[in-house]
Length: 336
Image (cartoon, rainbow, N blue to C red; front, side, top):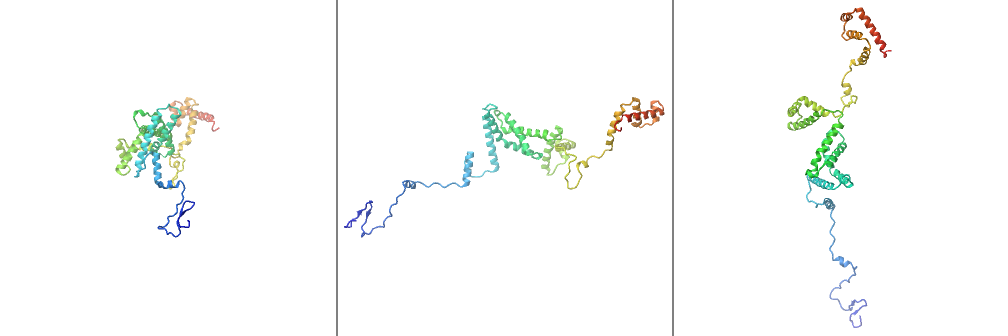
């Protein structure tokens, strides 16, 4: 500022007011220098807040399935039907793709393996129906998978039949064949085995109808068969494995084992070997001496009766018997 009180300009370009002049308004704060990009950033909107974890999971699930996140939760039945529909659609598309490749090629085998993996839930569903057979479920699933593979190899998509409809009987038949040929140690007639299935179905229906276990007569009347056939079918249905006679019976009542409760000691068993030996020795005697021994010890005739029947003296019959005994003792090398 000069001596006249006139404002002067500073080297920096700012104007300096005289000291005696009071400002009419409060001085504005000096402008602050900002970074070159700060002014541009201040004119843009703030970023949107992040979604919560649940919304993120829903969005991820929607991306995986190609669907928008649903607002209302689905019931387990609806989710199961939706999964089944997706599996059917995937199976149909895989079969269409499989038809365009040559059997045995690498791409054919890849699509075939994808079909097997996509339909394994069907095998587990069928295998669960045989849970009461006391067989390891892993073995039943493996056998059912063989049926699934056979169904995939024989399926013809051009006939317009859904693959689960075609594959179900094949899988069930393979599992039943496994139980019939490999599990049963006691094989029963096929007629009894098939009738046992009918008896089991009638038993369930009558139990539901009467609220109790049905009697043998009620089952027989329902199936138009005899009670003896019903009992035979029930026994055939239980005949899966043979029980060892020497197996210990783990019972709390202290009952003896199966071997002790069945059968008895036959006193005639001791004479089996002796009778077989005598039969072998008798064929070595002359025919007349064989007849005399049979009359004496099998028909219990006396020497007098034998002599009258043969027309010889009783003394001669006695001598022939003595000579036969001597020959039998000489031929019996066991006693010697």
